[in-house]
Amino acid sequence: MRRSGGIRRVLRWAGWTAAYVLGLVALTFAGAWTWWQPGPKARGTETNALWARHQWVGEPHSDAEYRALAALLKQNRITDVFFHAGPVESDGTVPAAKYRYAKRLNAAVHKYAPGVRTQAYLGQIRKVDGKGVIDLDDTVVRVRVVNTAATFLDLGFDGIHYDFEPIYPDDRAFLALLQKTRELTRSRGRLLSVALEQPTLVDAAQPVYKALLPRTGPWHYPPRPTDAFLRKVARRVDQVAIMTYDVSLPTKSLAGLHFARHTRHTLELIGDQVTVFMGVPTYRPMMDWAENLTVALRGVRRGIDELKRPPKRPYGVGVYADWTTEPAEWARYRATWLPPATEKVGR
Figure 1 (cartoon, rainbow, N blue to C red):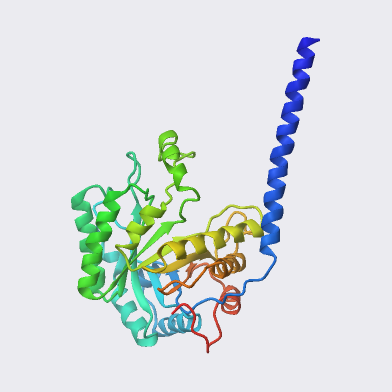
Figure 2 (cartoon, rainbow, N blue to C red):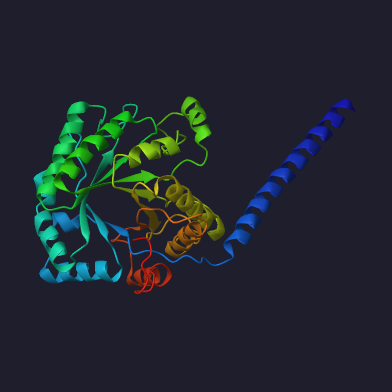
């Protein structure tokens, strides 16, 4: 009898625990759904970025193709294009054969879309715990990366866009690379931008993750910037693009809340120091019924609605990417994000 009574108590405790957890989940879903219902009031901006495929620098294009690219950029009010120009080799260089048409590309964009800034998009998998490609802790490698950036500026790019991953909030080598590259770009009157993962939800949890989880493997310490690290990055660059996509949330309201939360938090944190681009997807994520361009743009606008005041620097979205964006999605982007031509928002 005692044993059966103990089993009943365990089952009863398990039942109440399950009911409590399910109740919290239901409240979370219901709260997000209720929050999501009012349409956003804020309009988008005319300061926007686009990640572009490597073929633009690596393969020949006709004059008509360059004109079509310029028309797309102007129609969608894209101010900055991150043309993939790498990847960077393990020694910090990029073989010249990979970007043999970069100079022609820059000349064409500057001719047909004046005012649009071209940036050389350089990145690689950061070596962590012996895994990865490039070791940014190596001073010689960092010097070569900066020299590579100088080569691309010589080819006519208006800036350098770094996307090294993963970057953890104790990565002093990455900050040192940004500092040296900023010295280069400022001396040339050019820009430095960087792509970063979405910031942490709770900064205080990072020491726990670091102590309990490895930096590699399926269950790893997530490489998310803390507030303090994001401020350090902002002091060393001109633009920050937050890779807000790949949220893997099951409903539109939860995905939209994710985009809104990160938009508000990032703009409040560094929007007075640098231009901020919130990354929005046009590819097909795993949960594409919940995360898509429409949801992302609405979420970003809701985040802007929640700001106490607009940031001092320009801000907008970064569209990922040109090779996955269909004409219908560009039309949706213009309809739901761009302000009317007479308005000037985020400039």
